[in-house]
Length: 116
Length: 119
Image 1: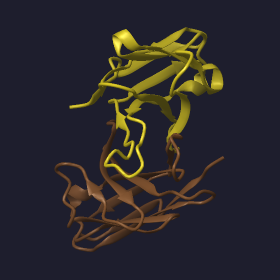
Image 2: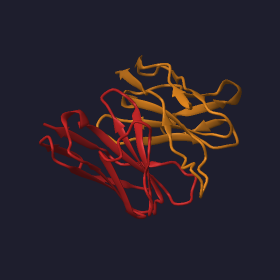
Image 3: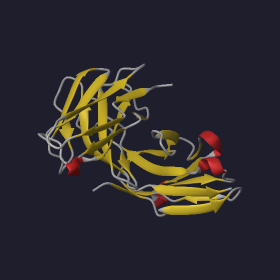
Image 4: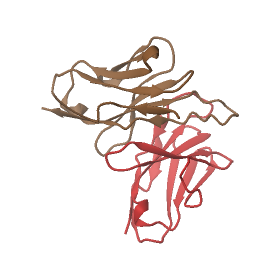
């Protein structure tokens, strides 16, 4: 089945550093990828929609300068948390949908980000 | 605004008990409906989906869901739960994506239901 790989799975870093998270669709092309944030015991909150070859679409209240998204190819999207602070600590999850399809999204394993 | 509501936040059942998790959505027009499951320490997995056709859909692991359009509901059911069904369950809805438009088919998730099955 379709697989989405997310890397790293866990990162701990100091406040003020930038962290890049990669999301790859391993066996299909994905024009659109999605980035979510999940707080403990809560649902997934959509942060932005990543579009290959164009700018990402951010949800209301999400700082685009804080969470930089690059979708450089049909199989890779990256989320960079810039100048991370403790309040950015969270579980970040990406998903991808097969190009030009109405099929369900496939989710990565998530990245647990801890900012000290 | 579009929203998805799951009524049960935390459900505790004994093995072999029947399960029904409620999901209601507010969305006009055609929608796709999904149930995802997140086992402890694992990624979200698709349990089942409804796009069109028979409103009673069967998914993996003995789960099924019924789409009732008049009630804007998509409740998840399983006749007999097992300890291994202990997980977080999410209902999600989207509008079918339209190429070349701003509609990317983004998913709106419900709050999630924690299911704990006692052996």
